[in-house]
Length: 295
Length: 88
Image (cartoon, rainbow over all chains, first blue to last red; front, side, top):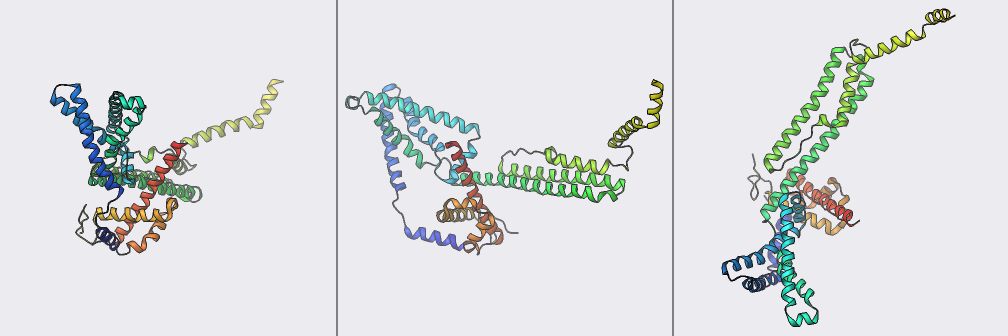
């Protein structure tokens, strides 16, 4: 099974053959620049040490490391930008950023010294532009053409990001549905639950709590499955920890359990106590007796 | 039961790579026509605009493509908003 539209676009791509685009030109330029960079850094590193192996290693580092590290910092497509955003939260990305910046600084410093030692450039005051051209050619252009990961890895990472996002959306939707359900229950508690028996009220309150706990369980299962598929850790926050949901649940529980039909309830005792006090204070006969005693 | 893989599927469903390629293509086309207005589209709007291109797909695939395109727009919106906030 395939998509007609996708097949049509692929067919058009095949018909158009190999087009020489700016990107192709840039790729050729990048290859030339890398060769030039190898020649340049070999010259520099060979001067710095007589050990050929160390010089070769440092040349390889200076030719390949800056473009590959910088390529992680320059996203080239929407998927690349998304990937960069996901990776930005990891320690590895911070390490890449620091290493790339240091290598850029090193490259700048050495090139500045090298161009300063060239009499013509020094006299004409073109040291800085020459250094910048060198950095663009040796680092930026190859970096633009290198993708930090293969397209398969990219697809996989974007898929994981989508999975996590789907989970987030589902959680939000579930919370909205639950909030709505609880609000309706709250309304009904005000109107119709007065006719229920005490046991029925208790049962209803426990059903509401059970409902929230059940949804919590489902969410935890989804979070675990997303984690096992994508390897991404999702912080699971319990619905019962949500202040609003807790408020609704407490209200419903109170409305159902603490009524005048249950004499042992905390609210009721408090109410009775206040009523008792106020009744004592306003008894007219007692007031009259006290007044007489004072005279 | 049909299985959908990365590159192949045993049933009539599109493999995942095709699904994503199609979603990317359609998102690019819609953005090319509507530019920033795409950020305001709901999933239903996206579905209506894409109907002609995806009507030959399985219903599940149609839903997936619409979701992926819409999600890509949301991601774009978030990135643009972030850039604007940083610019301020």
